[in-house]
Amino acid sequence: MFTETIDLPAAPPFDLAPSLRFVCGFTPTSGEQTIQEGTLTKALRARGRTVVAQIVQAGSGVRVTLHGAEPFTPDVTEAAADRVRFHLSLDDDLTGFYALGRDDPGFAPVLDRLHGYHQVKFPTPLENLVWAILSQRTPIAAAAKAKRALSGEFGNRLTVDGAEHTAFPDIDQLVSLPEGRLAELAGNQRKGAHLHGALLAWHETDEDFLRTGPYEQVKDFLLGLPGVGPWSANFVLIRGLGRMDETPAEKALLGAASRAYGRTLTEAELRKLAERYGPWQGYWAHYLRAAA
Image 1 (cartoon, rainbow, N blue to C red):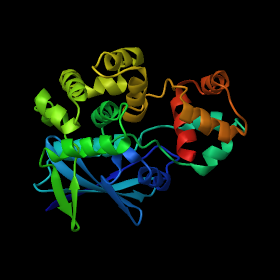
Image 2 (tube, rainbow, N blue to C red; image 1 turned 30 degrees about the vertical axis):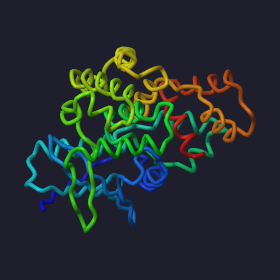
Image 3 (spheres, helix red, strand yellow; image 1 turned 180 degrees about the vertical axis):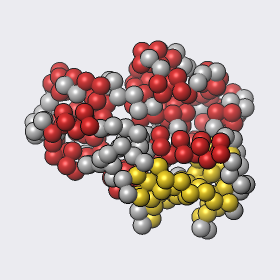
């Protein structure tokens, strides 16, 4: 086993502890990482290789110990670091968001509870896309089973400290699966077709464009994928890409906001509160859900 240790800074304020608490309750990745004594251990794919990252708070950022079956090259280390940084949103500058939140009496207690929390996104936006398709009109247990089946199709496993960790497949692996096999693994012919079409299109685009390209263009790309409607597109924009420009007025958010603000809110009132946060409204909504 080969190891490499890197320190990654985070935009202040940052506290890994609320991120670990969030991961413990995040159903789509349940059982896919371990958390012990303040350390998050997670398998990931970097430049076609499976790597296990052990992540712990170090000063105002994190220290990451990478484990691999082969010696680390600079490009693999850089790719793994980028995955960790993006997964934990270490670069998110929350200064403007916190300034708005502190001036909002209903929301300020939520900030206090989650102070220093940077959104934990899906490990990759690709994984978010696959989950969005698998979980549509499907019990969570069935979607999780299908996701495990997809991951089990490839040998992305590495044992660290006596525990085996499996990385979710990368796009080159997933796009190699024919539609019929995707349908078998998903347990549904329609989902198999949607996955096949969406993965082919995803393979032809650039993740940097999805992360940083014009918001409306990225949204249009997602809406053009098979099996992706407005809700799924917003889901991937926020939870997979960290694009916080909009927030859907869904029932769960309405309930969380009503509890935080101490009154039953209408959808119109929710939208008005969200608009106050401008480009931070996705973060505002995520904090409300995380606090609930």
